[in-house]
Structures are given as C-alpha cells and as structure tokens.
Image (spheres, rainbow, N blue to C red):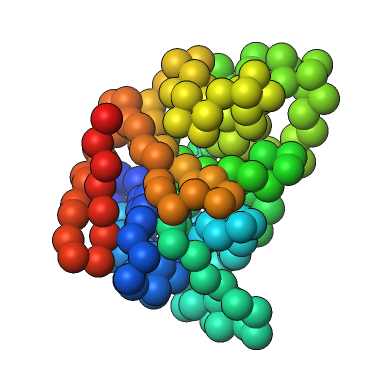
Length: 201
Ligand code: GLU
C-alpha cells in the first residue's frame, strides 16, 4: 500500500437512503478514494445500534471483514480512508470513532487543532478516551451535548462550533437514517440520486 507523490489525503464518504445496501455503496465509494493514499480503512452503519468495522490494512481487508458472518445493515453509513496525522496507524486509531455509549460514529479528514484541550474538558466530565487520534474527541463532544437534551442535529452543530482546525466530517447516529456533515478548509461534495437523499438546512 504505497503511494508515490508528495501529497497525501484521506477520504470520507457518507450514504443515506433506504433502497440501496449502504455497505456496498460505502465500499464502492472507498474504492474511488484510495488513489489519495491511506494507511487504514473503516466504515460504520446505523440502525438501532451503530456497527463499526475498521482495519489497519488495505481496502480488501475491510471488504473481507464486512463479509464476516454478522448482519451489517442500516439505512445510513459512513466510510473512511485514513492517512494518520495524530496516532499511529492501527485498528484502534482507524476511523470511524464513536462516543462512550456508541450512539454516534464519526469520520474525519483533517486535523482538530484544539483536540487536547477539548479532551481534557471532556475527561473532567467522565468521558473516557481510548485512542490516540485527534478525531476521537468529536463523537465524545457530540455525545456530551446530547446530555443537554439537544437533538442530534443541534448537538452536532454545537460540537462543530467548538472545533478548531481543518476538517471534513461525517457523522451517523443510532436510530437515525441520515448522515450529518460539515467542513472547514477541506472539500466535501454532496450528491443526490434515486438511491440516496440530501436534506439541506
Ligand atoms: N487527523 C486524523 C487522524 O489522524 C485524520 C487524518 C486523515 O485526514 O486521514 O486520524
């Protein structure tokens, strides 16, 4: 998995829509992103729970992993090819990342510059961090705002307001058939077709 060149970027993809198998859609999307270079891959789908599969390996390893005998279905999903900036390449540090209760999963392209101070604040209110990435703080921050009884959408917005750095982020939530996205100094493309949906607000 080598990449010749001087420009490395990860990739993110999200899918929402009930008619198409999200896992296959995500894998197809990831296969179109690997030219950018990557050290790990992963995906998550949402139904009444969040299911995450990720590997510090190539996309074929992820494809094999999702064929393992458990049902990986959902109406929304996110995927990632990682080029690590914070934390070594590993299964644990691969995206998606989740909060303590696995209610939200996040993929992220870029760097969260203030992740350390956010992590310290969240630790002081009982969030536990298990990974080395800057990204892990994002699902915990969203989850923290759930506790203020905010809706997923408002919790996502509130969390994003606190982030510093560059990012394209996609998030899914348990029991919700949608992907929430945001970006700052990173590109993000939204598409609509018969098998997917974009709801703008
Ligand atoms: N900073 C994040 C990490 O190291 C995302 C890197 C990327 O854009 O792939 O996990």
